[in-house]
Each structure stands twice: as C-alpha cells, then as structure tokens.
Length: 267
Image (tube, rainbow, N blue to C red):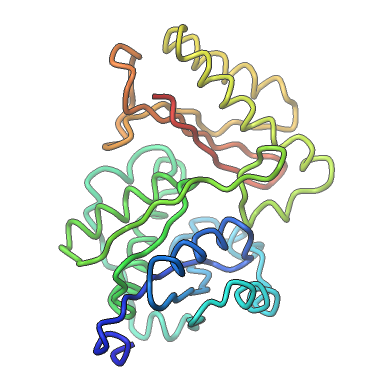
C-alpha cells in the first residue's frame, strides 16, 4: 500500500462481509473506473452483530467470492482474521451524533458502534482515497460519512444506488437464506415502498404511514419491525410533508427468520 501511495496512485476501497452479489460488483466496478487500484475486504465483523445466531448464520463462501472478484479484476483482496483486525481488545465508544439512535440503531443496540470500530480500523490500515457504500444501508452510510468528517479523515465516501433483482427485491447477502416461497413474497416490500412514494405526492404523512403498516400486516409471513420517514441528512423523524424535500422512507421487515431492509427517497 505504501508503494502505491508513493507513486501518487489513488486507492478505492469496497468493504464487504462476503457472500458477494451484483450489488457489491457495482461498487467494485465504480471504484475500478475511478481509481488506479481497488481493494475489496471480506470480513464478517462480530462487533456489529448484537444477535449471536445472526452472526452464526451469516452466509460465508470465500471460494465463490474470490471467483466473483476475478470477474471484475479486483486488484487486491484483503481477507483478515479476527485476530488480525483486533490484535488487542477494542471497545472504543464512538460519538455518532445521534445518527445511531433511530431505526436500525433502536432495534440493534451497539450495532453501529461495531460498524464504526471496524470501518475506522479498515480506514486506518488501507487509507483509501475513496470508499464505496451502497445506499441500501442508508443509515450506515450516513454514519460512516459522520465518522470521516468527525475524525477529519481525507477519504471521500462515495454512495451508490441500491441494486435490485428483476422483481425489485433489494440485493442482499441475506437473500440466499430465503426459501422459495419467501423469495416470491419478498419483492412486495419494495412494491409497498413504491406505492408509498406515489401516495406521498398527494396524501398526508399519516395516510402514508398507515398504508404501509396495513399493507405489510396484511401479508402474513411479514413481521414489520419499523417503517419510518426521516430527514435524509440528520435521520430525524419527519412529521409532515409540508416542505416536500429531503425525505427518505426506511423499512425493516422479518420474513421468517430473515431480516430485510430497504428504503426509498420520497422527495
């Protein structure tokens, strides 16, 4: 890495937890097109799992991932062990500006602090010029932008749009855990968000919220964890559509024991 930097070459970084799919590849392709070298990391970070069972069930197949990385000519794969990432105990507590207290953070306490620990560690090791994150994990992306700004790190965080399957389901490593029937139902999450976006043009805030709650509840295998409409910048709850700008709708739904998240910009 030092040799690359000494040549004034730019480094793009795509952090992943493996189980790579087309969404990851879109990030890697974007990095390849914008940097001299692209590094992909694969590391299932135990510090961001507040559910031990979820950690144990997280899909892992490094051999398949390596073959996928070859298709986009990724320059470097960084696949550290837990001992390499955390040679010493690391229980640092980050000030995340309140961005971690809502939505995902409300239902997954400690999750984003675990994300902050591992991302800061990766950034310190790799020192990329640009790091690429998908907008499916919108709250995570905003928190990482906060970390970079708060620590005055010379890294540009590059967002990338959500990659979707042909039926609209947001691509996720967790999708492989859905059974055949669940997979048929899963796209209804995105369809509900699309309907909410259309409703928001002429309907009230309460009408949109109530519609989504009713719609998800009507699909028996779904269990809604949250549906919230928040400000794109500070993630604070929006109470009405008076300004019709900077609003994003975020949702988390259990389908069986698989937790799926998605979002859509309303205005």
